[in-house]
Structures are given as C-alpha cells and as structure tokens.
Image (spheres, rainbow, N blue to C red):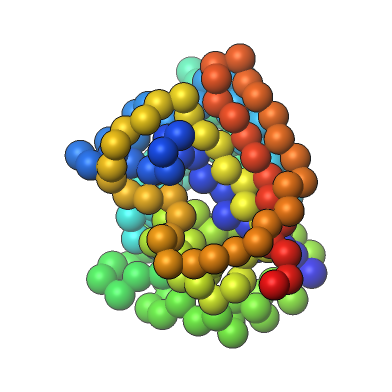
Length: 186
C-alpha cells in the first residue's frame, strides 16, 4: 500500500508563490535538489491540478544533453512516474504516462493508495487542499525557503486542524529547512 505524500517548497511564511505568482525564490540549489530527487524516487504516481501540471510539463520535453546531473536525474525520475491531472478546464493533457480526470474523488484516491506498492504524491496547493480536507494525506514533506513573501498562494489551507508527528528534519547550507510529518489519528 502506498502513502499519499504532499511535498512542497514554500516561503517561511507559508506561500508557494508570491502575490504576483512568482516562485523563483523557491528554486532549489544542487544540495536541496538532490535531496528532493531522493524523496521522489519511491513516487510512482503524481496527482496534479491544472496549474502545477502546467508548471511541471517542462520536465517532459526538457533537452537533457547539457543539463547538470541533478536535473537529468530528476527528469528521469519524473518521466518514469504516472501522472493524473485533475482539471475541469483542460481540454487534454500531453506526455507519456499522463491522464486527465475531471473530478477529484477521495474514494478513487483511497483505492489508488491501496492498490499500489509505490507512494503517491499530491503536488500543488489547490489539489493538496482537497486531499488534506478529505483526510487523505499520510505525510507532509515541506521545504521552507529563507524568504518571507508577505502573501500569495498558500501551501496549506486555513480551515483545517491536523495533529502531526515529526518524523524527520534537515537544515541545508542555503538556509532551506526540510520537515517531514506524519498525519496522526485525532
């Protein structure tokens, strides 16, 4: 059985993008990127909303010839995984191993977790909000960048109370801090 993991980079004040939609401040350095790659290796399926899918599609066609090893490694990991895109507005999705679903159904996600031997990652705060509210997220793997952006798109929803258990933490030379929490029963 796989776990549903919410893995996200955020500002210290909890935003994945600032009020102008920019997230360049969250680009991981090589040390953080290798760590993210290792976290992504057990992921067999990514769940995306429209916005995050559109950001991530660059990995489908990125020319890897002149890219650093860390980028080539992540592209290979990402390309090998299945992707499910939840959107009511997209006409279609492109790319290998990618399918479009119109509705996010908690029962379908529960079945997916039960039927897979790999982890499943939910990416993007909108879709993650739905998964969090439905009680589907098993682990939170969050990276906090040493920046305060003062507003924008929140990494976590306002209207949910969860008790979490700290499983791991790490500080990187860049000032980024990683925390890994398990959702605990209330």
